[in-house]
Amino acid sequence: MKRKLKSIIFAIILIMASNLFAFSAFAASDPSTGCVDFLNQNITGWVYNPSNPNKSIQVHVYIYRQDGSLVWCTGVTASNFRQDLYNLGWGNGNHGFSFSIPWDTFDWGSIPGYLLDVTAYAVDDAYPYHPTIFNSTSIQNPVHAGSLTWPISDIHYYLYDTTYATEIQNAATNWAYTGCGWNKLLPCDRTYANNNSAMDIFSYSDSTDGNNGYTYFFTANGNQVYPWLPFSDYRYSSINLNNYNISTNPNSPNYVQSVVSHEMGHVFGLDENNNNTSSIMCQAGHGRLADFRGVQFVDNYACNIKNP
Image 1: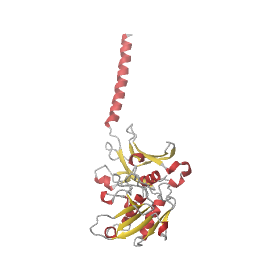
Image 2: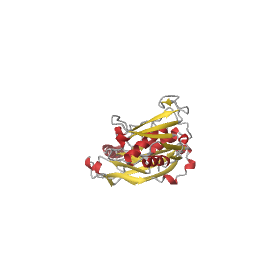
Image 3: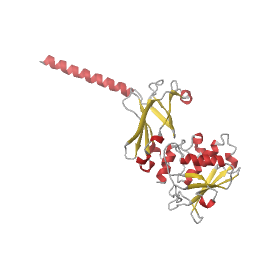
Image 4: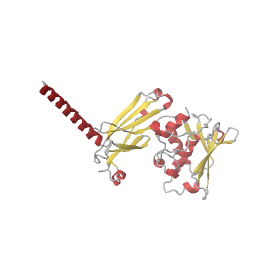
């Protein structure tokens, strides 16, 4: 009997040891890491596991309503070649992903405030924990204390200078039709009556001014206010573009459009977002990356928060 009991105890020890070894093997493996570079019509980024540098890892994306109910999800393998990752010595560099999100197919009538949350996970079957590489709620754009009192569904702009008429039209259209969700910024187009404008757009040229542009905010009586301060609602704004700086940028006219989009974001109540270089609300001097990609999901989300 004692011999049988010893055999049972020895078998249990072996099982425990094998399980501990298996857990240690998992623990020794580093979790995958990743990043979402852009989120607009497409979601673009990378996923990488330093313990297996040539392995292409899956990314799973989930989109939820604010109440947590699922709207859409998918999973893809991050296997696109990325030269920047290869240059970092990250294996063969095949760790990128980019795919479209079918925003237009969502039932927006069932999405209160047009507000959605997006979360992306790195999913590696060699590791039991799937780290979050993106969560839209953690990178929300800051907004002004003051708000635009002009009806958000009746937005127009008036041009005092038509030099950048095309770029301004493209910027306004991009805000109205972001491609990454709905908002109420309609029609967001040009008016030929300045008393029907929420945005008056001017240009100037100053070689000593380091700004690409700036925006002033006014009450209905024409008094200037500062919307980053409390109790500073405004009726309309003036956007001023520094022709000296923006016309000489090698990426113009895309660069001009991004400057206009940035300033329009201020009119809609968004503040600077220099902690997120993908956002159109990141200042150019802080490394804004959205010059060719326009308004991002985080920008549209903040606009809906500010203008319910």
